[in-house]
Length: 130
Image 1 (cartoon, rainbow, N blue to C red):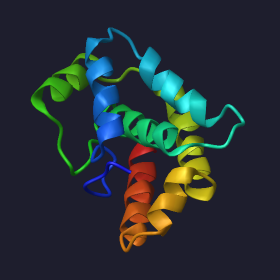
Image 2 (cartoon, one colour; image 1 turned 90 degrees about the vertical axis):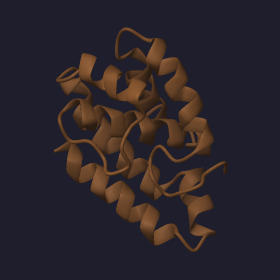
Image 3 (cartoon, rainbow, N blue to C red; image 1 turned 60 degrees about the horizontal axis):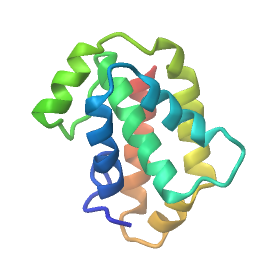
Image 4 (cartoon, one colour; image 1 turned 45 degrees about the vertical axis):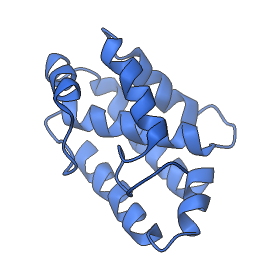
């Protein structure tokens, strides 16, 4: 799974995606990450991981950052995009529900002793969106 913790930014897949996000001038990558969860297909682990990272960053852009903290360059990107993406909040909330119900990432976490902590992390993120 490439994860070293249950946090939304604690895996290799999402950190690779963040590198691309830092080069972006708009929210297209965040929007795409959320939309991919809603495309009607089974949600693979990479898609879910990237969506969770994108949603965490979206929450931070609306003054509700996670407890994990962010690297300095990501913190700067978030500051540059503060308040943007309000229209993505509801689709992001719905994406979290889909990931928790039926995704490969959920199945992978269910096989670990940290599943309950992962669910709490997702629920905490959902609380930060509203």
